[in-house]
Amino acid sequence: MDERLRRFIVDRCKGGVIVSFSGGVDSSTLAFICNELLDDVIAVTVVSEVMPSYELEDAVRIAKEIGLRHKTIELGILSYDEFARNTVDRCYFCKKMMVRKIKEFAREVGIGTIFDGTNASDLNEVRPGYRALVEEGVCCPWVELGITKDEIVEIARRMGLSFYNKPSNTCLATRIPYNERITIERLKRIERAEEILRNVGFGVLRVRDHGEIARIEVGRDERSKFFDVRVMDWIVEKLTKLGYRYVTLDLHGYR
Image (tube, rainbow, N blue to C red; front, side):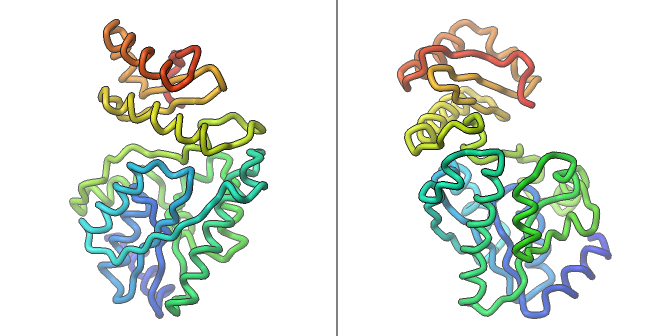
């Protein structure tokens, strides 16, 4: 283990730590390391309408696999109009509400430190949610130590963690273009559409919802699967039944 990381965690978490836990590589690796070093660690997953059900199942499974004390908290994010209106600050409002839920729980259990798995590579992109973390006083060890996504994957691999190469994912709301209202009906349709593609065997995928149009993105090395006409026809049939009039493939692949 990186000695800087070990010292950072031990110094910051005298009274224990809560790790905001999505079940992704970043938060899972951070939670695992904290659990190795500290006596009082709680992984907290905030469950809302924009979290795919399989991601919650994964979070529960991974928490159990690495021996974490795990807590799930419900958040009705669509009840907040600032989020549902789907402006460019959508992620800021979502993260703000999530962190406040975690802070309520932190006060209940008497833990003053909250960690988030945001990494140094994330800051190369537009991340409104990171601004909310800073404003709410949440600590991001990977960012503070300058540790990138690739380095986290390598740390997880060296530690023998089964999820080290798990594909990154984002919430279902990211499939809806900005300034188009987020509704539970659209979120459920997107989740069902992506489940259909996942059952075909696609690993990295997004179904972008443009009303009547489903724009499919898959990993660049997985695009050739669509050249099987039977697969293509089956996907079109299934997604059409969900209400999409047009089913398209983004030739760029996932970006």
